[in-house]
Image (tube, rainbow over all chains, first blue to last red; front, side, top):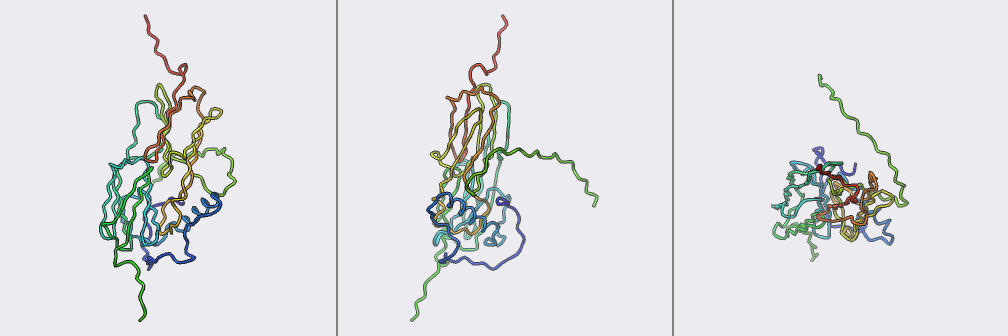
Length: 165
Length: 133
């Protein structure tokens, strides 16, 4: 199941983040838009349940689902929050943790209900990344029910080129 | 282990009528709420990430078709590190119970990734209260 979220096993696998290398799995533009979607879905699938977070997702609930990407030096977290009002969403950042909390409301007016599939209620999730962040330069964007968190890495985390004297 | 098994209601599997697509990419079914009032049928669909311009709603032969296409350009140049959900276009169809919907007056609004469709009933289909004199 692609969407399965939950407690992962406690294995700790040494995995450090490194900038994208040539040949790394990166989503690129394709000439054919149909191929593009298929390739995007496949590349996401390949990373499903990865060990990158090293079981650090200490969450109080699996909602909302989070995807984490590397974009150059930055880390980009994309969170699906359909039906959540911007004013009902709180984001806190500290060192290497991001906390996303809020509430999702689904209103039902008087009348007969035919289907009720959407979930609603409060949520609180903490995401711990295996890298140090620069909390002051985090940017958050919420559009069409999708939260994008631009998480720049702390200055000391960035890779440096060492000159050979 | 004296754990008693609770009787569970078996979920009925719905017959999938939709034709297979020629593209191997997966299309997702948006979660929906549907409720009916005296004047209208309201259909609410969750399609996170879909922009207003990429929503297509139509009624054909009594079937409501809703499609939402995702803008893939946003994913260009990203390297997946940790993935919990997959993305794709959305599509879902509903057989409307009767032809009592006023097709010319269907309203649609998209907010925070949630599409709300209002399908007003035609005058004759509305329940009437008859006053007794």
